[in-house]
Image (cartoon, rainbow, N blue to C red):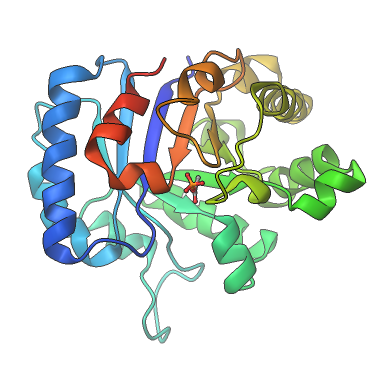
Length: 254
Ligand code: PEP
């Protein structure tokens, strides 16, 4: 069965002390206020991971730790990079890959992301796979084909058993950090199209069981309408994940 998931992508924000403060606030608020069937994932910068791991009590069964990236090689001479195996040793539960900022600023390709997916799965980490189109592509009317191709090239080599462990986040680039959210109709249309695309390759049951999150200027005001869409299973939250009250309210928006 597909899960309801809200993941906070802190990006390159919060010093170590600020990060621990934010994480402890979120951990407390989520335990007090968020229904246990909502999976909540915190994705702080790498250097915060070990300490934040210790802030998440084993009894908080819906709270998970994630990283924001990993390298596409298993190990070796890649100065400054972090491997899936290193993340597993913390341990982290989820890892965001293919965020549009990494695709744009670090030239990450669909082929590299396919390797990252494999390494994460081999290390028992859930890939949170981001996809999404630029404004140019949306205005040209080819956004569905573009985003479906991102899934095909990075995920369709997986067996059904492995694919079942992947979470997808649809993030239209024109909505990320811009305050310009996709309408619920736009989000639903894309999510339904992605699910139909998954069904062509993995069958309807597996497609129906896949969690597809929406990301892009999601906030406590617009989350209820977005999360009410039948094919939107939660959110990947950037800016609003940096405020414990806003993030917790989004987690309560189903
Ligand atoms: C993101 O970067 O994943 C994101 C959704 O950012 P924001 O919520 O700030 O648009």
